[in-house]
Length: 461
Figure (spheres, rainbow, N blue to C red):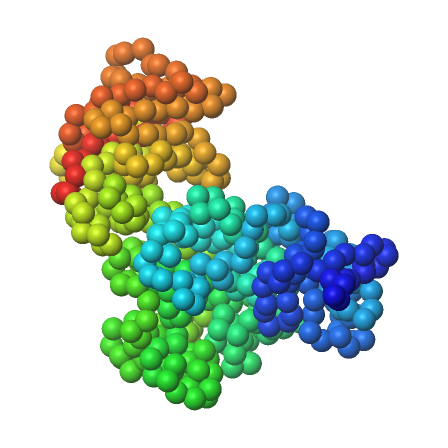
């Protein structure tokens, strides 16, 4: 029996290689036996590559990555290997595992549902987009966004995200940023050799991952390309062919994947159209990661879980796309703006234009199958994805709970005394349609957001 392969770092620590976790354009990533670390092994073992890696890691260690979920490089490997030890949480797997069912794994729809379904994919992708946007906010480009370099929680009900391959990080649009990318995820200008890595090349790579994770099809590789020769694939990835859902040119259409109307919201369809349409030849037309984050968040908050088959789907659909069961009843928690001068919700247009309902600035759907956490960023513009308020539906009743430290209060009318929202749920009985209850996320003398509630019966809009 042969010993398990091992590597030694520059400090002399020895590690045994565990299972391969991913494989990209530069090399492969392995778990380490008995450790909370992973190792990246590069394919190029030349002295030049080793020295270049040493310089890259020294540069990365000087970057401001505080608070970003990026697996940091810890130590270089000794010869004969070229690579480094990196941080990596246990219980995480590459996003690649969510892009296609395993061979011989049975129904693709069953696999899609069992791996978290539409809602989980939307939440994960929103988190990935948020992390990449935060990287861009520090003047950096990630460099090589691909499903091999993005790790997500293995548990199907968890949404943790972590980026690996920190050696790809570079100053956005730096002259020496390079063009290295994972095949299939490089922006067309990188494939053509006419541009360098920047935030817009990151946006393209992310968009490809998002489309694949949701629709189970590559947006640029249609049936004609799949059945053609390697030159056709290169042309498609270089942006010389239409994308698979181009409404005007169906020469590269694809029969692969899920119905786009089932998995893509209208806003996501528009972002895909801009990225894979005009954005193939005009990078500046590509939507950035902030727009992707907002659209994916909104889409995730628009989903319901089927009480019959557990498929998650958009509330705009009257029946479950998987089993045709009627849409369940749900509560729509709507966010509005509060006008401190008027002491009321802000209208969607000036009062002189006539009476109109207040303009919603966000919402989240809640059905009886799942409790839902309202994140800070829906309640406050400077908020993040951490939970602020939990909502759960029980028939015609809505339960609200929150950490008492948040100081949230429920207002039942303009004159009633507000009730504090704590860990013990407050139960509200909701009539069909709009209800008088409100949760204010700021004092009455300031502009802030207010949460109201509408109850919708099942099977209709």
